[in-house]
Image (cartoon, rainbow, N blue to C red; front, side):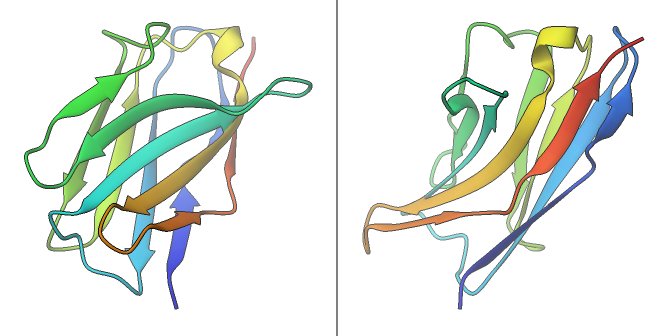
Length: 119
């Protein structure tokens, strides 16, 4: 059974940093896997924040977080982290970990972790 468990959310002041972690189980970080972080603020649609392709380490970032956020994966621990620096109030949202398998067409989501940026 596939499970994605996020951790690391919380309350931080503007300009601060947080590191989110996603622990994956039930599947292997194989070359067909893409891991992503999405976020959803109240009343808004879920949006892609950052993604990484396990096969070659290629990354993709939303324009709003480029230069501030970094995504990377640990293939041994089956984890993907998101380092968030220079946080802004508009970064406040529930952040979700997502895994997609292009070979099996699997698409899995974590339960989400709340990030609140406020003074």
